[in-house]
Each structure stands twice: as C-alpha cells, then as structure tokens.
Amino acid sequence: MQEIKFNHVTFKYPDSNKVLIDNQSFVLPTNKWISIVGHNGSGKSTVVRLLNGLLQPSKGKILIGDLEVNEQHLETVHKLVGMVFQNPENQFVGSTVAEDVAFGLENYNVAPEEMPTIIKQALKSVGMIDYEDSLIADLSGGQKQRIAIAGVLAVKPKIIIFDEATSMLDPVGRESIMKLLETLHHDGGYTIIMITHDLNEAELADHILILDQGKVVANDVTKKVLSNHQLLRKLQLTPAAGEQIREKLIHAGIKAPQEYITTGEMVRWLKQKLN
Ligand SMILES: Nc1ncnc2c1ncn2[C@@H]1O[C@H](COP(=O)(O)OP(=O)(O)OP(=O)(O)O)[C@@H](O)[C@H]1O
Image (tube, rainbow, N blue to C red; front, side):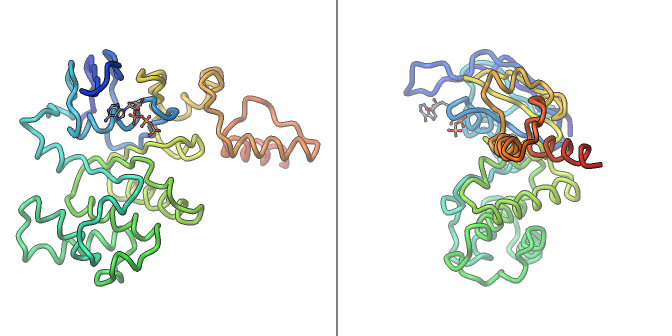
C-alpha cells in the first residue's frame, strides 16, 4: 500500500470557533509502526479520526494511497482503517467473546459459515483462542483490550489505529499489549498508528509524528525525531521514566549526559559505561 497523505487539511469542530488543524500537509509511511505524540488537546485524536473518516476536513484532502477519505468511500475506509480505543468497554456489543468479534463481521456482510474460522484466527492472533466462549464481563482489562483488538483484526484492516489503547492498563497489561503490537507489526504486516503521551512507548515505533497545538512539528524516522533534543525539551516532551532514571543515577553519584532522555537511550548509555 502507498503512503498516507494529508494535503492542506483544515479542521474545526462544528460547535467550536477554533480552527484546530490549520492547513496542515504531511505524509506518513505505510507498513510501518508510527507513533503520534503530543500533549493533551494537541489534536492527536482529531488527526486519526480524520484519517478513518469519523470526521471530515473543512478544507483539504486526505488520501490513503489512491483512495480519498470522504463520505463516498466511507465503507471502504472503515474496513481499511481499524480503530482500538482507550476504553475497550466502549467497543463491546456482544456478551461473549465470540459474539462480540462476530458483530463486527456482520457489519461487513461476511457469510455466517465463514465467521467461526475468522473469529478463531483473530483470537489466535491476540493470544485469546481459549476464551471464545467466555463472558466479556469476566475478563481482565488487558484481556478485554485484546478482544477489542481481535474484533478489529477480524475485519482484516491494513491500518490499525491505537488511540491510547494501553493507558487504562496496569504496567503488566500495558507491556503485554505493546508486545502484541510488535508481533502484529512484524508478523502481520499492518501499518500501526499508535497515539501515546509516553516517549518511551513512542520509541518502539519506526516513525514519529509530533503535534503541538494542531500543528505537525516533527514527522520523521524515530531516531531522527528522538535526537532532536532541543525540540523535545521545548515541547516538554522529555519522557518521565527516563528523567526518573536520571534522578536515581544522580542520587547514586552518576551524572548521565543531558542528551540521553528516553529510557532506551539511558540504558544504552549505562551499558556502554559499564563495559
Ligand atoms: N467534539 C468536539 N467539539 C469541540 N471541540 C472538541 C471536540 N473534541 C475535541 N475538541 C477539542 O479539540 C482539541 C483537540 O482535541 P483532541 O482530542 O484531538 O486532542 P488530543 O491530542 O487527542 O488530546 P488528548 O491527549 O487529551 O486525548 C481540544 O482542545 C479539544 O477540547
């Protein structure tokens, strides 16, 4: 699949006077893992909702390859771009796992006889094959999020958007969903777009887009974006976990250079120092 393009996109919510996205043009690669980073209210959710057609731009065009995201192509766009939200509870419609995954398929006119195989495949991809007949209410937060992801995978999208999909989980649940994303990305060939506040999570991506007050202020491969320390500090996007490690090291009498800011960078620096 070819790239994703925002061409001179302007957007304003109908009930607001503020132009939120003002004439923004940018290109995102496909078949990559992309993180969208920015503070609360910077426009991250708006950008991804424009991409999957939940919102329409006031001006400009959005293209996924040759396909223009507009009212006329909404069904194709929704099939192509799946979305997993912060709170899986908002996505469930069935009471059992299998019923819920089946519901998404019914919307796309999948023949009933094909459903059991598709449901099993999707549950297998998220490591939940043994839970087909379980009640959703009996699952943990992390398991619920996996089922929400299976529901999206069953429709066979090419792009999957995760809108802060780990933010309601505990650290263990969070890590297991991040591992699942890595597997989906490497083995499944999906384009993954992940919204996060956390640069340590963003660091796992191939590509990072940073938004600030509705404007794209960085859009490049991860290494390049994370090495622009001046910009990250200006935006106050230094990752909390990295800064905590720095403080602990200072207490231990070790001064890590200021330019190492993410946990990954900090760990690499420490390893080098210890060798
Ligand atoms: N339905 C709406 N009507 C009017 N304004 C809205 C609506 N939804 C969001 N906004 C405003 O648009 C701005 C951007 O919101 P958006 O949700 O895209 O930001 P975000 O970067 O995803 O934020 P967060 O990290 O808090 O989820 C915010 O100022 C928000 O208040």
